[in-house]
Image 1: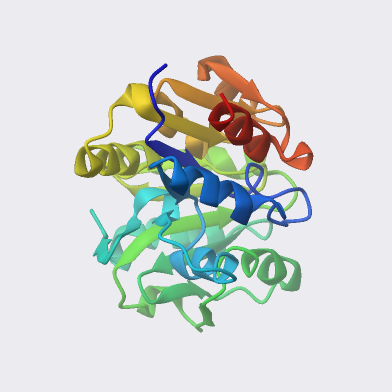
Image 2: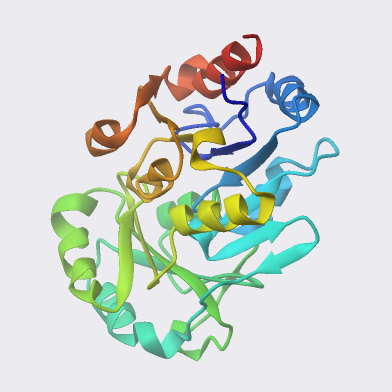
Length: 263
């Protein structure tokens, strides 16, 4: 049996249950991973500061892949492979402003920026962007952007996704949940980030275990042999995964990892 040397797992819908809670077994299982000589990466569409907050309850050397690969915290290194400037998304900002059903957040190295006063959107946004700033005009933001996230709380796939996809020639467009679609620079996705880490650690795809639930995990699940879609995953993700893990509400990631390392 080939030893697993790298485990990469998504957060929402994967590591976290439906109440956005991390498994109480996480710390114990993480120590099992480390004792076996393996490394764990958290690969999320969330910003880095949100991930940092989630895991500040114990000492660790987790690798963080934030903003779908736009930001990588690897040991003492921070990598932002291909940030872009706000001018590149002016048309998208204008489209969202004209649509009362849709809101938008700009994710940058120093935090996230939003201009919406929609209370339901702001509450939802703050679940994933713990460091966020309200601004009067998103076009005035000067920070380099890692990702643009578009939110429609009611009708994303039918209503909002089509006009976001008009930008597909210039950006990577990926649904991260039923109400969020992410827009990243070309060449940015979780799969590219995992491949970078594999190369840095000298880890083969055959030594890599991956967990995800939605379409922003699509490329990531193709970077290793032990690819798991959650039981609650999008049907298109299940089609490419080699294995199915129990759902996020059944502690699926912890179940699979524990079972593997007991072999």
